[in-house]
Amino acid sequence: RVLAVRRGALVPRDVLADILWGEVAPADPDANLDVLVHRARRALVDPELIITGSSGYALADDGRVHVDVEAFRAAVLEGREHVARNEDASALRAFQRALDTWSGEPLAEDFYADWAQPYRLELQRLQLEALEAGARAALRLGQPTQATQLAEMAIVREPLRESARLLFMEALAEAGDLAGALRAFEELRRLFAEEVGAEVSAEAIALHDRMRRRPTSPHELDPAPTTIAATDAAEAAARLSGQGSGPRRALILASMAALAAGSESYERGARLADLALLEAGGDSGARAEALAGPLSGSG
Image (cartoon, rainbow, N blue to C red):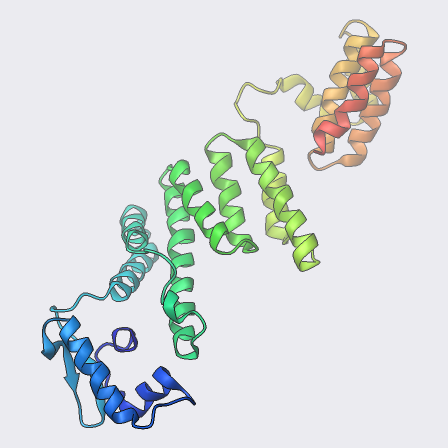
């Protein structure tokens, strides 16, 4: 494994001995190292795949040896180049090819070994890049389902990584699951408050606000109440004068209050909610709707 991650480079014998045994080296480390090299050559079938140098060993740097780490790294770098050229389809294919080679935790046998940490960290960073950049490319290509899957895998790798969770929210919204996207934001905010002790970024809040103002379909919201909700509460009451009974007007005002509270003006939403209660009068159903309006807009 040491020779594989450093393929093409001669690894000195003393470095190999230190990695293998540390401070508990055998009485004759050189002889023991020779035995291990012999066993490795026999396992690889072709003895020439491990090259002996003047002071160490190297794994042959040619087409006779396939190292999955190298294939993974090369595919991620290829995807990065396609992203730089705005070639989303080619980038997504390259990132997916990289992820297909990922078979589990890299260098799992050396989880606690000091020598393996730089390689493990590099590979984990490259995996996150493939997942997130692949998700962005999939979104631009109009493939929100694949984007959701890739972003979710990135979250599993790094639960507190905000960029992955924002991609997940965008992908859910693009896939038509706006409620799921909003729940994902609340989960992000909760995690940051509990685990980090901080608020989410301005970018996250801006994305959340855009999603709150986004209908799930073009016909979901009635244009007239939406327009009225953008006006002052007094003007809204005047424009609702032909909307029938007080309870009917109360229901419309409650809906408008929810819209306003969920967009840029919570104060306007509160005024509309107060008007809704006045319009409801003694109608218990209308009063319940009026009270629920602002809550549904801020959930």
